Amino acid sequence: MSPRRNRRDDPAPPGGPDRAWPGAATVETWAGGRWHVRTVPAPSAAKAYRCPGCDHEIAPGTPHVVAWPADDGGDLADRRHWHSGCWRARSRRRPPRS
Image (cartoon, rainbow, N blue to C red; front, side):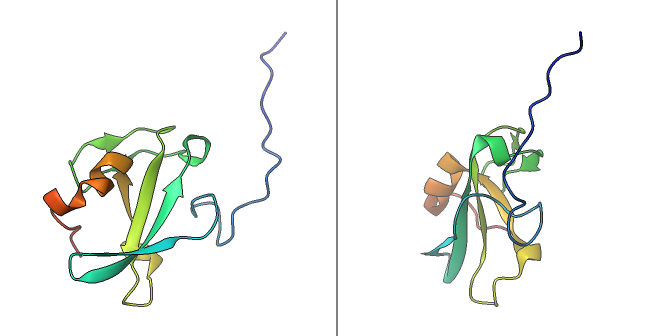
C-alpha cells in the first residue's frame, strides 16, 4: 500500500502560486521608505530563500515574512523573503539591495 497523499483544497492565492498567504500585506516604514509586508505561514513556505537580514537560508516549511517597496508601486519583482526575527530586528540589519 502506498503512502497517502495530502491534497490541498485551498484555491490558488490571488496573483498566482508565488503569492504568499494569508490576507493582505501591511505597510511599514523603514530605511527611508514604505514597505508592503506579508506573513508567510509554514504550510505556504514551499521554497528555500536567502534572508537579506542574516544572509542565511530560509528553509521550506519555515514561517517568515515577505517585504517589498510600496513607494515605487509595489513591484513584486523586488520582494525579499526575511526570517521573521530578522525583519523585526531590521533596524540593526542592512536594507535589501535594489
